[in-house]
Image (cartoon, rainbow, N blue to C red):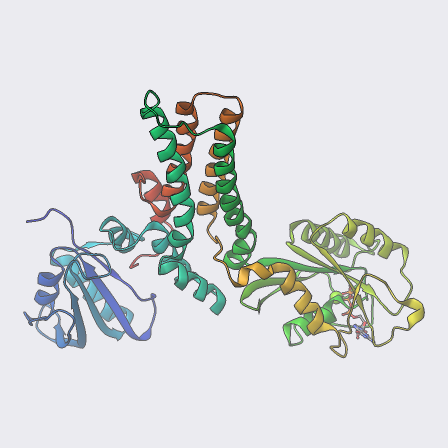
Amino acid sequence: MSDVPTIAALSTPAGRGGLGIVRLSGPQALSIARALLGGVELAPRHATLAEFRDADGALLDQIIALFFAAPRSATGEDVVELTAHGSPVLLAALLDAALTRGARLAEPGEFSRRAFLNGRLDLTQAEAVRDLIDSHTLFQARTAARQMSGSVAHSLRSLHHSATEVIARLEAGIDFADDDVTVVDAPELLAALDGLQVQIDTLLASFRFGRTVHSGILMAIVGRPNVGKSSLFNRLLGHRRAIVTAEAGTTRDLISESLDWDGIPIRLLDTAGIRDPAGEAERLGIEKSWQAIADADLVLAVFDGSQPLQSADHELLQHAAALPQALCVANKSDLATPRNSHPGMIAVSALTGSGVDELRQFVTLRLRPESSAQSEFITNARHAEHLSLARAALDRARLSVVAKVPHEAVLVDLYELLHELDAITGQTTVEDILGVIFSTFCIGK
Ligand SMILES: Nc1nc2c(ncn2[C@@H]2O[C@H](COP(=O)(O)OP(=O)(O)OP(=O)(O)O)[C@@H](O)[C@H]2O)c(=O)[nH]1
Ligand SMILES: [Mg+2]
C-alpha cells in the first residue's frame, strides 16, 4: 500500500450554486469514491450517475462521478471528481463522507503541487493555473492560458540552450587544455555572453508590460478644483459615479472604480481638487490627492483648456513634468479657442466626449509596447526575480573574462545563471520555494 495520503477538497467556491464539485486525488481516490456511492463501478473517463446517501441510507443527491486513472489525470494520481448539486450543506456532507473514509483535507494548492511533483506541469504552468483562476480580464485569462500550456518554458528554451552551449565549450576547453583543442578566446567568449545578455534583457524588459497585465495599474485623475476631473472620471467609466457640480471643491474624498482597457485592469481614482483648502475635510482630501499622485502608476493631470493656466496649474504642471508617469490633459475643449490652447496636452471634452477615445488609446499605447503583440512576456514577479539573478551572474562572468580569471571561475557564474533559469520552471528546485508558491493557491486547486 502506498503511504501517499489521498486528499479531498471542495473545488468549487463556497456558497450556493447550480453544481458543486468535490475532488479526490491519491491512491485511495477510487475506493473512497466507490464507498461513498454504494459501491458503484467507475470506469475511467466515463461519467457515472450514482446515488449519494447519508449514514442511515437516506438519499441525499444524485451525482455524477468521473474517474481519471493515474497517470493520465490532472495530478498524475488517481483522481475522482464528484459533481453534486450546489448546496453548501450537501457538499459539506459529501466532503465529510470522503474524509471519514480515509481522505485528508487538501492544503491550498496541494492538487497543483502533486501535479508538479508528478511531472504533469512545470512550475510556470502551475502558477499559470492560479493566474487563470485569478484573472479579471479576458486578456489576463488568455495570457495565463498560454502560460499554462508551457509558453514561459518555451521562451526560456533558447536562452537555456545558448547558456548550456557556452558552458559546454568552456568545459571542453578545460578538459582538453593539454590536447589540441583550442581554448575559447576572450573576444569570442564575450560575444557569446553578449548574446545571452540580449536574451535575458529582452525577457526582463517584457516584465514591465507583464506586470501591468498581471496586476493592473492605478490611474489617478488630479488637478485644481472645477477643471472637470469628476466629469472625466464619469466619462471614462461610462456612467455618473462621481458628483459633478459647478462649485469648486465638490469632490472631497478619493473615489475608486475598476476599468478594463484592452484587457489591462485599471483602478481609476477621482481626487479632490488641489488648492488652498477651505476647511479640515478639504485639507485631508487634498492630502489624499497628493498621496494618489505619489502612488499612481499613471497620473492624468487635468487642466481647464478653456482658460489660461493659473498659478495652481503651473505648480501641478511643474510637478507633472518631473513625473514620467504623468499625462497632461486639457479638458473643456468644447469651450476652448485657439487663443488659450495648451500645447503638448491631450485635448478632451468630458462634457461631449470628444478626444476621450484618443486619450484612452494614448494611455493603452503607453501601457502596451508594440512588441508585446508578437513576443511572449514575463508576468510573474518570481520569474523576473530569477532572471535578474541570472543577469547578475552573467555580469560576474563577464567581469571574470575581462579580468582574465581562469575559465573555471567563469563557469561557476555560468552554472549559477543556469540554476536561476531552472528555478523558474522548477527543474532543479527545492522544497522551500515550493512551499512559498503553492501556499498562495486556493484549496481544491
Ligand atoms: N463645457 C464643459 N464643462 C465641463 C467639462 N467638464 C466639466 N465641466 C463642468 O465643469 C464643472 C466642474 O466639473 P467637475 O467634474 O465637478 O470638476 P472637478 O475637477 O471634479 O471639480 P472638484 O471636484 O471641485 O475638484 C461642472 O459644471 C461641469 O459640468 C467640459 O468638458 N466642458
Ligand atoms: Mg470632482
